Length: 175
Image 1: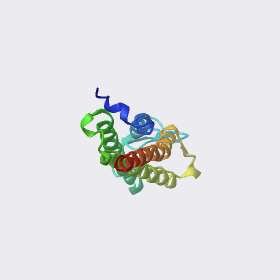
Image 2: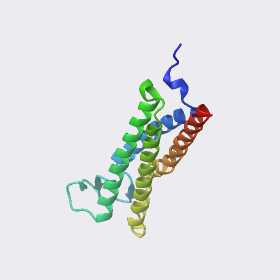
Image 3: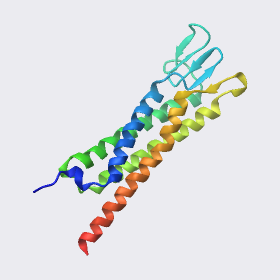
Image 4: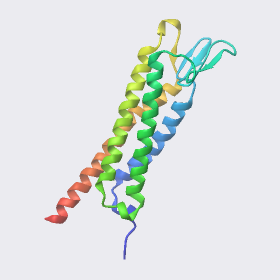
C-alpha cells in the first residue's frame, strides 16, 4: 500500500510551509501598504506618499530619492524569492514524483534566506533614510516588514533541519 507523499515529510517541512504562508501575507501587505512612515501631516509607503490634505503622489513614476528606489527593488526581489521558495516547497510536499528530491528543499531554503536578507536590507535602509527630527515615525507596515525579515530566517532554519533530516535518512538507507 503506497503512502501519501505528505506523510514521508517531517514536521520541519510542514512548519516551514505554514510559516511561509503567514510570511507571504505579511510580505504582501507590507509591500502594498502606504504606511511605512507617518508624520503629523501625512504618511509614506513604498509606492505612495501623502502630505497634508490631498497632496499625494505615486513613487513609482515620479522622481524619488535613491534609497526609496533601492527599497522598492529589494522588496520586489524579496517577494520573487519568497514565491520561488513556496513553489518549490509545495512541489516537494505535495507531489509524489518529487518526494525524494532534496534539491527542492535546498532551493526553497536558499530562496527564503535570500528573501530574508533582502528584507533586512530594506528595513535597515528605510530606517536609515528617515528624518526623525521632522516628526517622522515608523508605522505598522514597517513593523510587518521587520516581522518578515526575522521570521524568514526561522523558516530557513526549519528547511535546513528538513534537509539535514533527509540527508541522514539517505545515509541510513545505505548502511
